[in-house]
Length: 593
Image (cartoon, rainbow, N blue to C red):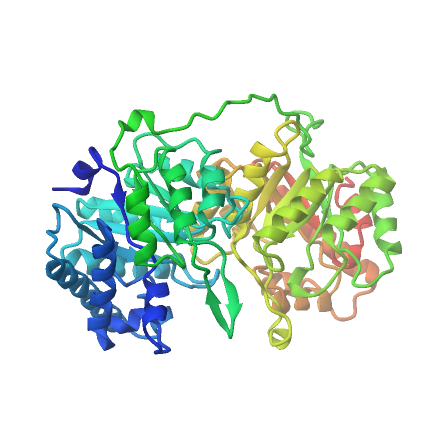
């Protein structure tokens, strides 16, 4: 019998937390997954305890079975997973259960702790290796748990489904307010998983206790055609003697989970802190009779709001080029030069002034606060850059809400430059997510909080990426999340302009071509050697001579900028000026005939 058939008639009780019970019955200080090989009898004993308590679905002891967590190679990961699978099978056999009749076994997969700079192909390969190892052992259920979004696992799930018929469960981890570490709401997470035909069951696990889980689920519209899972923590732990201890509240847990089950949940179990006692009481409390899936969902009342338009191009005529000018916030408390530049640009009717967010990972005045001051004192349209380097999802949402309250309606959403190597020992980057993940947060806020007057946001475009197809894919991903425009790295040559034209043809994105009027040989050499992603060619360098005066250097930079505009004016939507040393008067010279 397949698990789908079982679920047509009866809800399923899942097991509880393997790691919690492992810690409770052994004094050994080891990663639970290492016990698959080192202590197999203990692993079997834990599985047997959950089966005896009434669990129908158990998960392999493989949440952290990956190269990063186990600190090993591919062959060792495979062996760990194989041993875990066989330990669980033996526990089922010894318990007197029959796999596929009154018991089911899922290959358990947790998030691999890779940083945001890990290539997507490496991430895909690692997850695919794990899945293929389970499938080679005969698994027909794969359970992805405690994820903050779908980005890294959906491509793997799609690939697996093309090769094998397997039941896929995806579970997300959210906080008490219903948001994941990626800043995405539980409602959106379930909705996105619901749109993926390759996913069979979706739900929430970890992060919260049963009371908060019920509150979160009660506000969500469940996706149609999907089985729903709920595996909360026992509650909230306390730190006692350097160990996270959950209090014994199994009866409370079971009462709350009864309420959860009545919301139309199909698979119920426990995460951190839940032992076999919790599962036993859960089975006693819940009515396992299944209802038709059509009756399982909760329909949220739709509210349709006609959005406003605060985009920086709203008053621009058709065919006119958009003009964005970057002003760097000061590195100290003196903003006199910044304000002078802003007032100069006001007189020259630029469409928006942008403010970078501590570029190159070096401290400057906050981009949002600088934007607010300029907007308040000049009346200009402003656009702060918002990067992912310095804040986690909670702080990012807080920052975005504060910016909105203070009138910010245009943003450039970027991943951000890393902290310089020399100061990494003292200052740590955060990077909970990249620019696409941050765009998801802004997009969600536009739907939930800013619906009457949504924020217009865009992204960065790097036409100098070695594989241009990768950049085309990134642009499409950002557009799918709501990015309305793209600012590019500075363009200096016809060859770069051709690359940009190709991106435009492939994506039809609104593109503001980057223009950086270099002002001297020293400036050109610095940008070439110190600024990643900007391609200043030797031909460009050669146009600046050591003996040039300031005026001659600026004139050369203006000439190059005019050439770039000539290369691109037939296909770009505007220009994004990043001018060394805030010499914004060069914009006027560039557009002089």
